[in-house]
Image 1 (cartoon, chains in turn blue, green):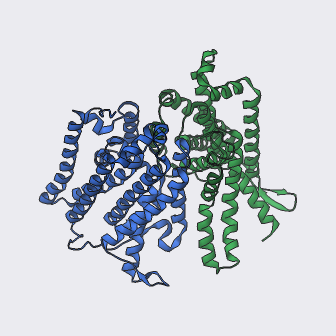
Image 2 (tube, rainbow over the protein chains, first blue to last red):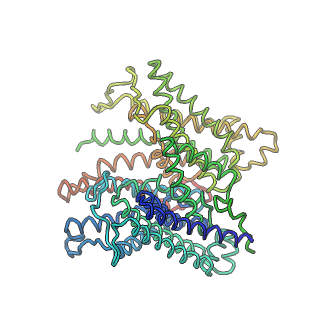
Length: 328
Length: 306
Protein backbone atom coordinates (compact mmCIF):
# COMPACT_ATOMS: atom_id res chain seq x y z
CA UNK A 1 0.00 0.00 0.00
CA UNK A 2 2.87 2.31 0.89
CA UNK A 3 4.06 2.46 -2.69
CA UNK A 4 0.67 3.37 -4.09
CA UNK A 5 0.13 6.07 -1.50
CA UNK A 6 3.56 7.51 -2.24
CA UNK A 7 2.72 7.62 -5.96
CA UNK A 8 -0.41 9.55 -5.09
CA UNK A 9 1.53 12.02 -2.94
CA UNK A 10 4.07 12.43 -5.74
CA UNK A 11 1.40 13.11 -8.34
CA UNK A 12 -0.26 15.66 -6.08
CA UNK A 13 3.09 17.36 -5.53
CA UNK A 14 3.76 17.73 -9.25
CA UNK A 15 0.20 18.84 -9.90
CA UNK A 16 0.54 21.43 -7.15
CA UNK A 17 3.84 22.67 -8.50
CA UNK A 18 2.21 23.12 -11.90
CA UNK A 19 -1.07 24.52 -10.59
CA UNK A 20 0.40 27.32 -8.49
CA UNK A 21 2.12 29.16 -11.37
CA UNK A 22 -0.89 28.52 -13.62
CA UNK A 23 -3.03 30.22 -11.01
CA UNK A 24 -0.43 32.98 -10.69
CA UNK A 25 -0.51 33.45 -14.46
CA UNK A 26 -4.28 33.88 -14.30
CA UNK A 27 -4.10 36.17 -11.26
CA UNK A 28 -1.14 38.09 -12.72
CA UNK A 29 1.25 37.41 -9.84
CA UNK A 30 4.66 37.10 -11.53
CA UNK A 31 6.50 36.85 -8.20
CA UNK A 32 4.65 33.63 -7.35
CA UNK A 33 5.73 32.22 -10.71
CA UNK A 34 9.32 33.04 -9.81
CA UNK A 35 8.91 31.25 -6.47
CA UNK A 36 7.56 28.16 -8.25
CA UNK A 37 10.46 28.32 -10.71
CA UNK A 38 12.89 28.39 -7.79
CA UNK A 39 11.19 25.33 -6.33
CA UNK A 40 11.50 23.45 -9.62
CA UNK A 41 15.18 24.34 -10.07
CA UNK A 42 16.21 23.72 -6.46
CA UNK A 43 14.29 20.44 -6.53
CA UNK A 44 16.33 19.50 -9.59
CA UNK A 45 19.55 20.21 -7.67
CA UNK A 46 18.20 18.06 -4.85
CA UNK A 47 17.30 15.20 -7.20
CA UNK A 48 20.93 15.23 -8.28
CA UNK A 49 22.22 15.05 -4.73
CA UNK A 50 19.60 12.47 -3.77
CA UNK A 51 21.00 10.05 -6.33
CA UNK A 52 24.36 10.09 -4.55
CA UNK A 53 23.06 10.63 -1.01
CA UNK A 54 19.84 8.67 -0.89
CA UNK A 55 20.39 5.83 -3.30
CA UNK A 56 24.17 5.60 -3.08
CA UNK A 57 24.58 6.51 0.59
CA UNK A 58 27.34 8.96 -0.35
CA UNK A 59 27.00 11.88 2.05
CA UNK A 60 28.35 14.65 -0.15
CA UNK A 61 28.58 18.02 1.57
CA UNK A 62 30.10 19.54 -1.54
CA UNK A 63 27.36 19.57 -4.13
CA UNK A 64 27.56 23.36 -4.27
CA UNK A 65 30.63 22.75 -6.46
CA UNK A 66 28.49 21.35 -9.26
CA UNK A 67 25.72 23.89 -8.71
CA UNK A 68 28.32 26.62 -8.98
CA UNK A 69 30.02 25.15 -12.03
CA UNK A 70 26.68 24.97 -13.81
CA UNK A 71 26.05 28.57 -12.79
CA UNK A 72 29.44 29.78 -13.96
CA UNK A 73 29.14 27.82 -17.22
CA UNK A 74 26.08 29.92 -17.93
CA UNK A 75 27.72 33.08 -16.58
CA UNK A 76 30.94 32.76 -18.57
CA UNK A 77 29.31 31.77 -21.87
CA UNK A 78 26.69 34.52 -21.66
CA UNK A 79 29.25 37.08 -20.45
CA UNK A 80 31.33 36.58 -23.59
CA UNK A 81 28.25 36.60 -25.80
CA UNK A 82 26.89 39.86 -24.33
CA UNK A 83 30.32 41.56 -24.56
CA UNK A 84 31.12 40.13 -28.00
CA UNK A 85 34.46 38.85 -26.78
CA UNK A 86 35.76 35.42 -27.76
CA UNK A 87 35.63 32.71 -25.07
CA UNK A 88 39.04 31.36 -26.00
CA UNK A 89 41.00 33.99 -27.85
CA UNK A 90 43.42 31.80 -29.78
CA UNK A 91 40.64 29.63 -31.20
CA UNK A 92 38.16 32.52 -31.45
CA UNK A 93 35.38 30.40 -29.97
CA UNK A 94 32.50 32.77 -29.18
CA UNK A 95 30.26 32.75 -26.12
CA UNK A 96 26.61 31.84 -26.47
CA UNK A 97 23.19 32.89 -25.25
CA UNK A 98 21.54 29.63 -26.28
CA UNK A 99 20.19 27.63 -23.33
CA UNK A 100 20.61 24.16 -24.82
CA UNK A 101 24.28 24.82 -25.58
CA UNK A 102 24.81 26.29 -22.11
CA UNK A 103 23.13 23.28 -20.51
CA UNK A 104 25.32 20.88 -22.46
CA UNK A 105 28.45 22.74 -21.35
CA UNK A 106 27.19 22.92 -17.73
CA UNK A 107 26.39 19.21 -17.63
CA UNK A 108 29.68 18.14 -19.21
CA UNK A 109 31.80 20.47 -17.08
CA UNK A 110 30.16 19.49 -13.81
CA UNK A 111 30.29 15.81 -14.74
CA UNK A 112 34.02 16.07 -15.39
CA UNK A 113 34.65 17.86 -12.10
CA UNK A 114 32.43 15.34 -10.28
CA UNK A 115 34.45 12.54 -11.87
CA UNK A 116 37.70 14.07 -10.61
CA UNK A 117 36.41 14.88 -7.10
CA UNK A 118 34.65 11.53 -6.87
CA UNK A 119 37.71 9.59 -8.00
CA UNK A 120 39.67 11.14 -5.13
CA UNK A 121 37.03 11.24 -2.40
CA UNK A 122 35.62 7.78 -3.02
CA UNK A 123 38.97 6.31 -2.06
CA UNK A 124 37.74 7.06 1.44
CA UNK A 125 34.38 6.60 3.09
CA UNK A 126 32.28 7.69 6.03
CA UNK A 127 33.36 10.85 7.82
CA UNK A 128 36.38 11.33 5.60
CA UNK A 129 34.13 11.50 2.57
CA UNK A 130 31.94 14.17 4.17
CA UNK A 131 34.91 16.30 5.18
CA UNK A 132 36.68 15.96 1.84
CA UNK A 133 33.67 16.91 -0.26
CA UNK A 134 33.14 19.88 2.06
CA UNK A 135 36.78 20.86 1.61
CA UNK A 136 36.65 20.68 -2.18
CA UNK A 137 33.62 22.94 -2.05
CA UNK A 138 35.65 25.54 -0.15
CA UNK A 139 38.45 25.17 -2.69
CA UNK A 140 36.17 26.20 -5.55
CA UNK A 141 34.65 28.95 -3.41
CA UNK A 142 37.98 30.58 -2.64
CA UNK A 143 39.20 30.02 -6.19
CA UNK A 144 36.27 31.94 -7.70
CA UNK A 145 36.78 34.71 -5.15
CA UNK A 146 40.45 35.10 -6.00
CA UNK A 147 40.03 34.79 -9.80
CA UNK A 148 39.23 38.30 -11.03
CA UNK A 149 38.44 37.60 -14.71
CA UNK A 150 34.77 36.77 -14.04
CA UNK A 151 33.88 39.24 -11.33
CA UNK A 152 35.78 37.67 -8.44
CA UNK A 153 34.02 38.21 -5.15
CA UNK A 154 31.31 40.41 -6.70
CA UNK A 155 30.11 37.83 -9.20
CA UNK A 156 28.70 38.99 -12.50
CA UNK A 157 25.36 39.97 -13.95
CA UNK A 158 23.90 38.83 -17.25
CA UNK A 159 21.59 41.51 -18.59
CA UNK A 160 19.16 39.41 -20.59
CA UNK A 161 17.88 35.91 -19.93
CA UNK A 162 19.32 33.39 -22.37
CA UNK A 163 17.24 32.15 -25.27
CA UNK A 164 15.57 28.85 -26.00
CA UNK A 165 14.59 27.97 -29.58
CA UNK A 166 10.92 28.73 -30.18
CA UNK A 167 10.17 30.04 -26.67
CA UNK A 168 10.19 33.60 -25.37
CA UNK A 169 12.14 33.03 -22.15
CA UNK A 170 11.55 36.58 -20.92
CA UNK A 171 7.98 35.62 -20.01
CA UNK A 172 8.21 34.27 -16.44
CA UNK A 173 5.77 31.43 -17.03
CA UNK A 174 7.70 30.22 -20.08
CA UNK A 175 10.88 29.99 -18.08
CA UNK A 176 8.99 28.14 -15.36
CA UNK A 177 7.75 25.70 -18.00
CA UNK A 178 11.29 25.09 -19.22
CA UNK A 179 12.55 24.45 -15.68
CA UNK A 180 9.57 22.25 -14.86
CA UNK A 181 10.13 20.23 -18.04
CA UNK A 182 13.80 19.78 -17.14
CA UNK A 183 12.78 18.60 -13.65
CA UNK A 184 10.23 16.15 -15.10
CA UNK A 185 12.71 14.76 -17.62
CA UNK A 186 15.34 14.21 -14.94
CA UNK A 187 12.79 12.66 -12.56
CA UNK A 188 11.78 10.17 -15.26
CA UNK A 189 15.42 9.43 -16.04
CA UNK A 190 16.44 8.96 -12.40
CA UNK A 191 13.26 6.97 -11.66
CA UNK A 192 14.14 4.53 -14.43
CA UNK A 193 17.76 4.40 -13.30
CA UNK A 194 16.73 3.52 -9.76
CA UNK A 195 14.73 0.55 -11.03
CA UNK A 196 17.40 -0.51 -13.51
CA UNK A 197 20.18 -2.94 -12.55
CA UNK A 198 22.49 0.06 -12.03
CA UNK A 199 20.22 1.62 -9.42
CA UNK A 200 19.59 -1.67 -7.66
CA UNK A 201 23.31 -2.40 -7.50
CA UNK A 202 23.99 1.13 -6.23
CA UNK A 203 21.40 0.65 -3.53
CA UNK A 204 22.97 -2.68 -2.67
CA UNK A 205 26.36 -1.01 -2.36
CA UNK A 206 24.86 1.24 0.30
CA UNK A 207 23.19 -1.58 2.18
CA UNK A 208 25.83 -4.26 2.08
CA UNK A 209 29.09 -3.64 0.30
CA UNK A 210 30.57 -7.05 1.09
CA UNK A 211 27.71 -8.92 -0.53
CA UNK A 212 27.94 -6.74 -3.63
CA UNK A 213 31.63 -7.53 -3.91
CA UNK A 214 30.84 -11.21 -3.47
CA UNK A 215 28.63 -11.20 -6.57
CA UNK A 216 31.42 -9.59 -8.52
CA UNK A 217 30.43 -5.93 -8.75
CA UNK A 218 33.00 -3.26 -7.99
CA UNK A 219 31.33 -0.71 -5.69
CA UNK A 220 33.96 1.97 -6.44
CA UNK A 221 33.11 2.21 -10.14
CA UNK A 222 29.41 2.06 -9.40
CA UNK A 223 29.64 4.89 -6.87
CA UNK A 224 31.88 6.95 -9.12
CA UNK A 225 29.33 6.66 -11.94
CA UNK A 226 26.52 7.66 -9.60
CA UNK A 227 28.51 10.57 -8.17
CA UNK A 228 29.34 11.83 -11.67
CA UNK A 229 25.74 11.61 -12.80
CA UNK A 230 24.62 13.26 -9.59
CA UNK A 231 27.05 16.13 -10.12
CA UNK A 232 25.90 16.56 -13.73
CA UNK A 233 22.25 16.89 -12.67
CA UNK A 234 23.08 19.42 -9.98
CA UNK A 235 25.20 21.28 -12.56
CA UNK A 236 22.20 21.55 -14.87
CA UNK A 237 20.20 22.97 -11.97
CA UNK A 238 22.98 25.49 -11.36
CA UNK A 239 22.81 26.71 -14.97
CA UNK A 240 19.05 27.14 -14.72
CA UNK A 241 19.29 28.89 -11.36
CA UNK A 242 21.85 31.33 -12.75
CA UNK A 243 19.50 32.02 -15.64
CA UNK A 244 16.61 32.62 -13.24
CA UNK A 245 18.59 35.24 -11.30
CA UNK A 246 20.64 36.43 -14.29
CA UNK A 247 23.47 36.60 -11.78
CA UNK A 248 26.26 34.30 -10.65
CA UNK A 249 28.53 34.77 -7.65
CA UNK A 250 30.94 32.71 -5.54
CA UNK A 251 28.14 32.14 -3.00
CA UNK A 252 26.82 29.46 -5.36
CA UNK A 253 29.93 27.51 -4.32
CA UNK A 254 29.62 28.20 -0.59
CA UNK A 255 29.19 25.49 2.03
CA UNK A 256 25.80 27.01 2.91
CA UNK A 257 24.61 26.17 -0.60
CA UNK A 258 25.77 22.58 -0.15
CA UNK A 259 23.93 22.52 3.15
CA UNK A 260 20.75 23.91 1.64
CA UNK A 261 20.72 21.36 -1.19
CA UNK A 262 21.10 18.72 1.49
CA UNK A 263 18.21 20.25 3.45
CA UNK A 264 15.90 19.89 0.43
CA UNK A 265 16.70 16.20 0.31
CA UNK A 266 16.28 15.66 4.04
CA UNK A 267 13.12 17.71 4.59
CA UNK A 268 11.46 15.87 1.72
CA UNK A 269 12.69 12.39 2.54
CA UNK A 270 16.07 10.79 1.83
CA UNK A 271 16.22 8.28 -0.99
CA UNK A 272 12.67 8.93 -2.20
CA UNK A 273 12.53 10.03 -5.82
CA UNK A 274 10.21 12.97 -5.13
CA UNK A 275 11.74 13.81 -1.75
CA UNK A 276 13.71 16.82 -3.06
CA UNK A 277 10.59 18.21 -4.78
CA UNK A 278 8.69 18.17 -1.49
CA UNK A 279 11.74 19.43 0.38
CA UNK A 280 12.43 22.33 -1.98
CA UNK A 281 8.76 23.33 -1.95
CA UNK A 282 8.68 23.26 1.85
CA UNK A 283 11.95 25.22 2.04
CA UNK A 284 10.70 27.97 -0.28
CA UNK A 285 7.37 28.14 1.56
CA UNK A 286 9.17 28.46 4.90
CA UNK A 287 11.55 31.05 3.52
CA UNK A 288 8.68 33.03 2.08
CA UNK A 289 6.32 32.93 5.06
CA UNK A 290 8.67 32.64 8.04
CA UNK A 291 11.08 35.04 6.35
CA UNK A 292 8.19 37.48 6.19
CA UNK A 293 7.56 37.13 9.93
CA UNK A 294 11.11 37.25 11.23
CA UNK A 295 14.45 37.98 9.64
CA UNK A 296 15.88 35.28 11.90
CA UNK A 297 13.84 32.54 10.27
CA UNK A 298 16.90 30.30 10.01
CA UNK A 299 16.44 29.57 13.72
CA UNK A 300 13.07 27.98 12.94
CA UNK A 301 14.58 26.16 9.98
CA UNK A 302 17.28 24.82 12.30
CA UNK A 303 14.75 23.65 14.88
CA UNK A 304 12.62 22.02 12.16
CA UNK A 305 15.64 20.27 10.66
CA UNK A 306 16.69 19.06 14.10
CA UNK A 307 13.18 17.73 14.66
CA UNK A 308 13.14 15.91 11.32
CA UNK A 309 16.54 14.33 11.99
CA UNK A 310 15.71 13.28 15.54
CA UNK A 311 12.08 12.25 15.18
CA UNK A 312 10.82 12.05 11.58
CA UNK A 313 13.45 10.37 9.50
CA UNK A 314 11.28 9.82 6.44
CA UNK A 315 10.89 13.56 5.90
CA UNK A 316 7.72 15.12 4.54
CA UNK A 317 6.97 12.34 2.06
CA UNK A 318 7.59 9.82 4.82
CA UNK A 319 4.99 11.57 6.97
CA UNK A 320 2.45 11.75 4.15
CA UNK A 321 3.00 8.39 2.52
CA UNK A 322 3.92 6.22 5.47
CA UNK A 323 6.99 4.08 5.83
CA UNK A 324 8.85 2.83 2.85
CA UNK A 325 8.01 -0.78 2.07
CA UNK A 326 10.91 -3.10 2.61
CA UNK A 327 12.51 -4.52 -0.51
CA UNK A 328 13.84 -8.00 0.01
CA UNK B 1 63.18 39.23 -0.68
CA UNK B 2 65.01 38.58 2.47
CA UNK B 3 65.50 36.04 5.16
CA UNK B 4 63.59 38.31 7.52
CA UNK B 5 60.46 38.07 5.38
CA UNK B 6 60.75 34.29 5.25
CA UNK B 7 61.11 34.02 9.03
CA UNK B 8 58.20 36.41 9.59
CA UNK B 9 55.98 34.39 7.30
CA UNK B 10 57.03 31.10 8.89
CA UNK B 11 56.03 32.58 12.26
CA UNK B 12 52.67 33.67 10.80
CA UNK B 13 52.20 30.18 9.43
CA UNK B 14 53.00 28.70 12.84
CA UNK B 15 50.53 31.06 14.47
CA UNK B 16 47.68 30.06 12.18
CA UNK B 17 48.79 26.43 12.51
CA UNK B 18 48.59 26.30 16.31
CA UNK B 19 45.16 27.96 16.26
CA UNK B 20 43.98 25.38 13.72
CA UNK B 21 45.35 22.74 16.05
CA UNK B 22 43.09 23.96 18.87
CA UNK B 23 40.10 23.49 16.56
CA UNK B 24 41.25 20.23 15.04
CA UNK B 25 42.21 18.70 18.39
CA UNK B 26 38.67 19.14 19.71
CA UNK B 27 37.11 17.78 16.54
CA UNK B 28 39.38 14.76 16.40
CA UNK B 29 38.99 14.05 20.12
CA UNK B 30 35.20 14.16 19.84
CA UNK B 31 35.28 11.96 16.78
CA UNK B 32 37.78 9.55 18.32
CA UNK B 33 35.89 9.07 21.58
CA UNK B 34 32.24 9.46 20.60
CA UNK B 35 32.38 8.71 16.87
CA UNK B 36 30.59 12.00 16.25
CA UNK B 37 31.22 14.43 13.41
CA UNK B 38 30.45 17.85 14.82
CA UNK B 39 29.81 20.58 12.25
CA UNK B 40 28.81 22.95 15.03
CA UNK B 41 32.41 23.13 16.22
CA UNK B 42 32.73 26.40 14.31
CA UNK B 43 29.80 27.78 16.30
CA UNK B 44 31.66 27.03 19.54
CA UNK B 45 34.62 28.98 18.14
CA UNK B 46 32.27 31.86 17.39
CA UNK B 47 30.70 31.68 20.86
CA UNK B 48 34.15 31.90 22.41
CA UNK B 49 34.98 34.98 20.36
CA UNK B 50 31.70 36.71 21.14
CA UNK B 51 31.91 35.94 24.86
CA UNK B 52 35.46 37.28 24.97
CA UNK B 53 34.57 40.43 23.04
CA UNK B 54 31.47 41.11 25.13
CA UNK B 55 33.11 40.53 28.53
CA UNK B 56 36.38 42.24 27.64
CA UNK B 57 34.36 45.16 26.28
CA UNK B 58 32.32 45.41 29.47
CA UNK B 59 35.10 44.91 32.02
CA UNK B 60 38.11 46.12 30.09
CA UNK B 61 40.04 43.02 31.05
CA UNK B 62 41.35 40.78 28.30
CA UNK B 63 42.03 37.92 30.71
CA UNK B 64 38.46 38.02 32.04
CA UNK B 65 37.37 37.91 28.40
CA UNK B 66 39.46 34.78 27.81
CA UNK B 67 38.01 33.16 30.93
CA UNK B 68 34.50 34.02 29.73
CA UNK B 69 35.29 32.51 26.32
CA UNK B 70 36.44 29.25 27.90
CA UNK B 71 33.43 29.12 30.22
CA UNK B 72 30.84 30.05 27.59
CA UNK B 73 32.06 27.67 24.93
CA UNK B 74 32.52 24.79 27.38
CA UNK B 75 29.03 25.41 28.75
CA UNK B 76 27.52 25.60 25.26
CA UNK B 77 29.37 22.41 24.34
CA UNK B 78 28.15 20.56 27.43
CA UNK B 79 24.63 21.82 26.83
CA UNK B 80 24.35 20.65 23.21
CA UNK B 81 26.03 17.37 24.09
CA UNK B 82 23.58 16.60 26.86
CA UNK B 83 20.49 17.83 25.03
CA UNK B 84 20.95 16.87 21.39
CA UNK B 85 24.16 15.18 20.39
CA UNK B 86 23.91 12.38 22.94
CA UNK B 87 21.00 10.98 20.94
CA UNK B 88 23.15 10.81 17.82
CA UNK B 89 26.12 8.68 18.90
CA UNK B 90 24.61 5.49 17.56
CA UNK B 91 23.18 7.10 14.43
CA UNK B 92 24.83 7.24 11.03
CA UNK B 93 27.01 10.15 10.01
CA UNK B 94 24.33 11.71 7.83
CA UNK B 95 22.09 12.29 10.85
CA UNK B 96 25.01 13.75 12.79
CA UNK B 97 25.90 16.10 9.94
CA UNK B 98 22.32 17.30 9.62
CA UNK B 99 21.67 17.76 13.32
CA UNK B 100 24.90 19.66 13.84
CA UNK B 101 24.18 21.69 10.70
CA UNK B 102 20.83 22.57 12.27
CA UNK B 103 22.74 23.66 15.38
CA UNK B 104 24.90 25.96 13.23
CA UNK B 105 21.74 27.62 11.89
CA UNK B 106 20.36 28.05 15.41
CA UNK B 107 23.61 29.35 16.91
CA UNK B 108 24.42 31.69 14.02
CA UNK B 109 20.99 33.26 13.84
CA UNK B 110 20.73 33.33 17.63
CA UNK B 111 24.00 35.21 17.86
CA UNK B 112 22.91 37.60 15.11
CA UNK B 113 19.70 38.18 17.05
CA UNK B 114 21.60 38.86 20.29
CA UNK B 115 24.50 40.92 18.97
CA UNK B 116 23.29 42.23 15.62
CA UNK B 117 24.96 41.89 12.24
CA UNK B 118 27.78 44.33 12.89
CA UNK B 119 31.14 42.85 13.87
CA UNK B 120 32.44 43.33 17.40
CA UNK B 121 36.05 44.17 18.13
CA UNK B 122 38.26 42.68 20.76
CA UNK B 123 41.31 44.80 21.55
CA UNK B 124 44.73 43.39 22.20
CA UNK B 125 45.65 44.35 25.79
CA UNK B 126 48.45 46.89 26.27
CA UNK B 127 50.78 44.39 27.87
CA UNK B 128 50.61 42.21 24.75
CA UNK B 129 50.59 44.86 22.04
CA UNK B 130 53.46 46.25 20.06
CA UNK B 131 56.33 44.49 18.35
CA UNK B 132 59.05 42.49 20.00
CA UNK B 133 62.61 42.32 18.73
CA UNK B 134 63.66 38.80 17.87
CA UNK B 135 67.28 37.73 17.29
CA UNK B 136 68.37 38.66 13.78
CA UNK B 137 66.69 42.07 13.91
CA UNK B 138 63.15 40.89 13.25
CA UNK B 139 60.29 42.92 14.64
CA UNK B 140 57.36 40.61 15.27
CA UNK B 141 54.03 41.40 16.98
CA UNK B 142 54.18 40.26 20.59
CA UNK B 143 50.55 39.17 20.54
CA UNK B 144 51.06 36.72 17.68
CA UNK B 145 54.13 35.36 19.44
CA UNK B 146 52.02 34.92 22.58
CA UNK B 147 49.39 33.05 20.56
CA UNK B 148 52.03 30.64 19.29
CA UNK B 149 53.18 30.16 22.88
CA UNK B 150 49.68 29.53 24.21
CA UNK B 151 48.92 27.13 21.37
CA UNK B 152 52.07 25.10 21.93
CA UNK B 153 51.44 25.11 25.69
CA UNK B 154 47.89 23.81 25.19
CA UNK B 155 49.15 21.18 22.76
CA UNK B 156 51.72 20.03 25.31
CA UNK B 157 49.11 20.05 28.09
CA UNK B 158 46.71 18.04 25.97
CA UNK B 159 49.34 15.40 25.22
CA UNK B 160 50.16 15.21 28.92
CA UNK B 161 46.48 15.02 29.86
CA UNK B 162 45.84 12.17 27.48
CA UNK B 163 48.96 10.16 28.02
CA UNK B 164 49.67 10.77 31.74
CA UNK B 165 46.47 11.27 33.69
CA UNK B 166 43.67 8.99 34.82
CA UNK B 167 41.09 10.92 32.84
CA UNK B 168 43.33 10.56 29.81
CA UNK B 169 43.44 6.82 30.29
CA UNK B 170 39.64 6.79 30.36
CA UNK B 171 39.47 8.89 27.20
CA UNK B 172 41.80 6.50 25.41
CA UNK B 173 39.86 3.54 26.75
CA UNK B 174 36.68 5.18 25.48
CA UNK B 175 38.22 5.38 22.03
CA UNK B 176 39.19 1.74 22.11
CA UNK B 177 36.02 0.19 23.48
CA UNK B 178 32.98 2.13 24.65
CA UNK B 179 30.95 -0.74 26.10
CA UNK B 180 33.90 -2.17 27.98
CA UNK B 181 34.76 0.91 30.00
CA UNK B 182 31.08 1.39 30.75
CA UNK B 183 31.02 -2.15 32.07
CA UNK B 184 34.10 -1.43 34.18
CA UNK B 185 32.15 1.16 36.11
CA UNK B 186 33.17 4.41 34.43
CA UNK B 187 30.24 6.77 34.10
CA UNK B 188 30.43 7.01 30.37
CA UNK B 189 27.90 9.76 29.85
CA UNK B 190 29.77 12.07 32.23
CA UNK B 191 32.99 11.23 30.43
CA UNK B 192 31.41 12.08 27.07
CA UNK B 193 30.08 15.40 28.30
CA UNK B 194 33.51 16.18 29.75
CA UNK B 195 35.34 15.36 26.52
CA UNK B 196 32.86 17.42 24.55
CA UNK B 197 33.21 20.38 26.91
CA UNK B 198 36.99 20.11 26.66
CA UNK B 199 36.88 20.14 22.86
CA UNK B 200 34.43 23.05 22.95
CA UNK B 201 36.65 25.02 25.33
CA UNK B 202 39.62 24.56 22.98
CA UNK B 203 37.53 25.90 20.10
CA UNK B 204 36.33 28.81 22.24
CA UNK B 205 39.91 29.64 23.24
CA UNK B 206 40.96 29.69 19.58
CA UNK B 207 38.00 31.91 18.73
CA UNK B 208 38.83 34.39 21.49
CA UNK B 209 42.53 34.54 20.64
CA UNK B 210 41.87 35.02 16.91
CA UNK B 211 39.05 37.45 17.70
CA UNK B 212 41.64 40.00 18.79
CA UNK B 213 43.33 39.86 15.37
CA UNK B 214 40.25 39.64 13.16
CA UNK B 215 36.78 41.01 13.65
CA UNK B 216 34.29 39.02 15.71
CA UNK B 217 31.26 38.27 13.58
CA UNK B 218 28.61 35.69 12.81
CA UNK B 219 29.87 33.07 10.38
CA UNK B 220 33.50 33.46 11.46
CA UNK B 221 33.67 29.87 12.69
CA UNK B 222 32.71 27.78 9.70
CA UNK B 223 35.65 28.56 7.38
CA UNK B 224 38.00 27.74 10.25
CA UNK B 225 36.08 24.57 11.02
CA UNK B 226 36.34 23.41 7.41
CA UNK B 227 40.07 24.12 7.49
CA UNK B 228 40.21 22.02 10.64
CA UNK B 229 38.49 19.24 8.68
CA UNK B 230 41.26 19.47 6.08
CA UNK B 231 43.75 19.23 8.95
CA UNK B 232 42.06 16.12 10.31
CA UNK B 233 41.85 14.48 6.90
CA UNK B 234 45.57 15.11 6.42
CA UNK B 235 46.54 14.04 9.94
CA UNK B 236 44.18 11.09 10.27
CA UNK B 237 40.92 11.10 12.20
CA UNK B 238 41.21 10.46 15.91
CA UNK B 239 44.93 11.19 16.17
CA UNK B 240 45.95 14.19 18.28
CA UNK B 241 49.49 13.96 16.94
CA UNK B 242 48.07 13.88 13.40
CA UNK B 243 46.05 16.99 14.23
CA UNK B 244 49.18 18.83 15.35
CA UNK B 245 51.26 17.83 12.31
CA UNK B 246 48.36 18.46 9.95
CA UNK B 247 47.59 21.85 11.50
CA UNK B 248 51.17 23.06 11.19
CA UNK B 249 51.38 21.76 7.60
CA UNK B 250 48.15 23.49 6.62
CA UNK B 251 49.02 26.73 8.45
CA UNK B 252 52.45 26.94 6.85
CA UNK B 253 51.30 25.92 3.35
CA UNK B 254 48.47 28.44 3.38
CA UNK B 255 50.50 31.37 4.74
CA UNK B 256 53.64 30.76 2.73
CA UNK B 257 51.65 30.00 -0.43
CA UNK B 258 49.83 33.33 -0.26
CA UNK B 259 53.08 35.29 -0.05
CA UNK B 260 55.48 33.27 -2.12
CA UNK B 261 53.41 31.75 -4.94
CA UNK B 262 52.71 35.17 -6.57
CA UNK B 263 56.43 35.95 -6.19
CA UNK B 264 57.35 32.62 -7.73
CA UNK B 265 55.12 33.21 -10.74
CA UNK B 266 56.56 36.72 -10.97
CA UNK B 267 59.88 35.20 -11.96
CA UNK B 268 58.59 34.17 -15.37
CA UNK B 269 55.30 36.04 -15.88
CA UNK B 270 54.27 39.65 -16.09
CA UNK B 271 53.39 41.10 -12.65
CA UNK B 272 49.56 41.31 -12.83
CA UNK B 273 49.18 37.85 -14.36
CA UNK B 274 51.61 36.50 -11.78
CA UNK B 275 49.62 38.00 -8.93
CA UNK B 276 46.29 36.58 -10.12
CA UNK B 277 47.64 33.15 -11.02
CA UNK B 278 49.74 32.99 -7.87
CA UNK B 279 47.01 34.03 -5.48
CA UNK B 280 44.40 31.83 -7.19
CA UNK B 281 46.71 28.88 -6.89
CA UNK B 282 47.56 29.83 -3.30
CA UNK B 283 43.87 29.77 -2.41
CA UNK B 284 43.81 26.16 -3.59
CA UNK B 285 47.15 25.06 -2.15
CA UNK B 286 45.95 23.39 1.05
CA UNK B 287 43.28 21.44 -0.82
CA UNK B 288 45.89 20.27 -3.29
CA UNK B 289 47.98 19.22 -0.29
CA UNK B 290 44.98 17.32 1.05
CA UNK B 291 44.41 15.61 -2.30
CA UNK B 292 48.06 14.63 -2.47
CA UNK B 293 47.99 13.10 1.02
CA UNK B 294 44.81 11.22 0.14
CA UNK B 295 46.40 9.76 -2.97
CA UNK B 296 49.28 8.37 -0.94
CA UNK B 297 47.53 7.58 2.37
CA UNK B 298 43.72 7.57 2.17
CA UNK B 299 43.42 7.43 5.98
CA UNK B 300 45.73 10.38 6.61
CA UNK B 301 49.29 10.56 7.87
CA UNK B 302 48.61 9.10 11.32
CA UNK B 303 45.25 7.46 10.72
CA UNK B 304 44.76 3.80 11.42
CA UNK B 305 41.66 2.53 9.62
CA UNK B 306 39.13 4.40 7.51
